[in-house]
Image (tube, rainbow over all chains, first blue to last red; front, side):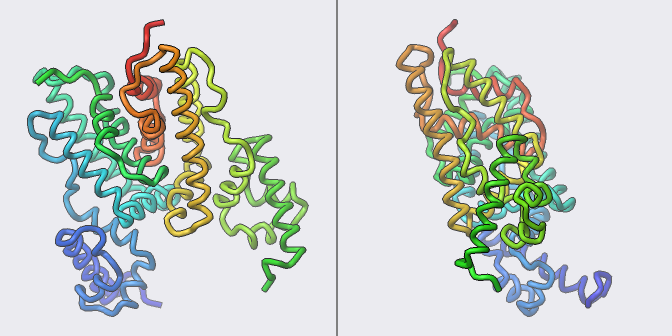
Length: 189
Length: 189
């Protein structure tokens, strides 16, 4: 059996992760397959399977190495920005691969510490970014929040996530608007 | 290998499911373990493992045989009823076993047709019950809905589910209130 400390083992792991990262950035999560990763990394498919028997944890690892694209760099008006960001999140959650990776993450995190650390990382980024954007929006008089800004991610992303993974249907613009409106009273404009 | 049509195989499967169902009704989801199910069913633990290598799918099957307890039999005022029901759902989602079974269901449903049918069954019951209760509440003048009543389950259970499985923290009363208020304008009372 190959040791985890074997330099060749570590080198191929690194090459595979780099390939997964490149594919993710170039073509999105659906491109991170064993076949495409093996080809890009210049290793055999069996090597990819040895490191990551399933594709989802590999995608989770690759995602952890690239900047989280959602809720980054808020623009004004905040309400329009948030509507666009939630629409982008809902679109991603319509993809089978994103559904697979997010439910695998939520499930595996219950007994795997590394996956739980990834879960906490992703969740923490989303919660913190949205809270900061909404605190700023409130300071500018754009919204009077009806909840703690730290609850806003659950209040808005939660419905998209439930719709995608439990109800297994697309989130329509009306649901997205309802989630945005649930945050508080938006100033007219 | 034992055939699926073997009468003894079918009998032990039936006994295990009945035992799981009894334990679920008597003591809740945390009681549906391989050890307790084997003892109650009067079969060896290995037999339970042969039918259900993991405990979660057995719990899913058992859950499908008992009436779904949530959002059933609405009472007036609807707002108080819904707050109680969402609190009950949030409390259940605080349990590790319920987290495990719900994320296993969402994850496994992506490639297992039987599990997907269970997912659709549970999701459909919750969506339909809440929509009916809210339509009635609106007809009584209790609320002016801000969204389609079919979107209400995602809007209210979604935040509890995301908080529990992605943020891994308890849903506090403020989040539950925010979800209830997100449904529309409640008449004073």
